[in-house]
Every structure is written in structure tokens, then in C-alpha cells.
Length: 286
Figure: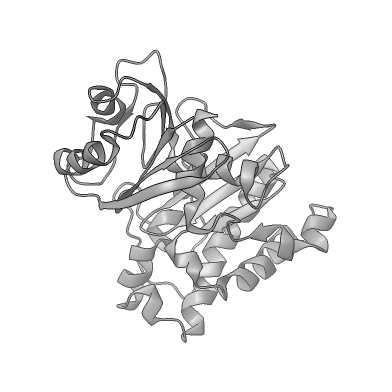
């Protein structure tokens, strides 16, 4: 089966042609500008490729309710020009194939559970830390949906005692995304994360916020694997800091060897590397 896959991100759209085995035959990266301009390039890429199905994982919030009049739309996003844009409706104008649709992080969680770091497990979390913070969740073999979909990047966390930064989320100020996303790091320290590698205070504070969130997710959802991706997590020295603080925060309450003895193999980078979202879009079709 020839499957079209789209990882629709706030910074870039990654489009690919693949199959149900996770093989990507061809891919392209398109900057996310206006909907019209971005979709023009997306449609052009897929034209003539004879795709039989299409999987789309999108930045959000998105409307996943098939009974809703706005199903397939990106809703209250702070991304300029994209609020209330019917992404799936626009794609269906050009491609008469069935479309599977979810959030980009849910797609990544699914991809990692089928082919990546959580292969063989029926639950996992995929957390992306980059331009924003998003979390996808798989529980008992199913992606988590409800009233809308998980928005775990916007939970409230305790402020670090040395942090004077007000927070950058336009909706919540100092929520997790407002304090720990890539733009928050840059706003707080005056430099991009990649320029701050040698400043231990930056990463101790970042780990402080991310570890709080992960401890909360563990207590609420009890995932069998926690996967951390996104641009900020390319700083590999963050992983041991986060693991250490998660264990400290949980304080021995969760009595499981994955937490107490095997944390290094429990909180991990993506097994699919930078392809989790795109390969996950193939998984949505499966």
C-alpha cells in the first residue's frame, strides 16, 4: 500500500511517501508559513504519487470529533493565520482517499509503540520539547482522546526558586510550555538553547520543570515508557538530569523496578529518531 504521511508542525510540515511497514521512500520538509502557501507545496508534493491513504499528525489544538462540524480543523492555536483552519477538509479537496487524523504527538507515540522505543508495549508517552511542548499518550493499546485530546504541555508546575522569568505561554503564562519550551529558554537567558550548552544552571532548571511534569504523568497515566523528543532534547545531557529528578520527586512512592532500578531505560530518546511523527502518521493509517 502506498501511504502519504504528513507531520504538520508549527515550524515545518514534513511530508513523506511510505508503506505499512514504516519504510519512508521519499520525503520533503516545507516551512510552515500561511495555510494557503504551505498547503500549495504539500499538495504539489503528493500529486501524481498515487497514494492510497493519507495519515496526518498535526500541531494543535485540533478537532478530532468526527461528529463535529469543524472536524479536522486546527482550532485555538497561537500560530498566526492557522486558527480555525480546516486542514483535513482542505486536503480532501485534492485527494479522494481516506484520511487518518490525530495530533502530531499522538502520532509519534503510536509510531514509537509500533516500531520504536516502546515497541511491544501497550502504553507509552511521547513528549516533544521544542517550539512548544506537546504530549501524546497511548494507554491499553489505544491513543488517548476525550473531551478533545491531551494538552499535557500546558499543565501547571512549581516555579524554580531562582527563576524570575514570567513565562511565555500566551494563554497560561507560566505553564510547562511557558517555562520550558525552546522559546522560553531563549527568552529567559537571551540565547538559543544550542548556545547555552555549557551553562549548567540552564539545564538544571529545564530538568526541574520537565521532571515535575513527567512525575505527574507517571502518577496519572502510569506509562510503560516515557519518550522525550524535540529540538531541546537534542541536548543529551538533559536526560540524566531529568531521570535523577524524577526519581527524587517520586520519592520511592512508585515501587517499580523501572523507576527504582532501570530509569535509564524507562525515560529515553525516540527509537525512531527525528522520524517519530512522520512514521507515526503511517501508523495512524494502519
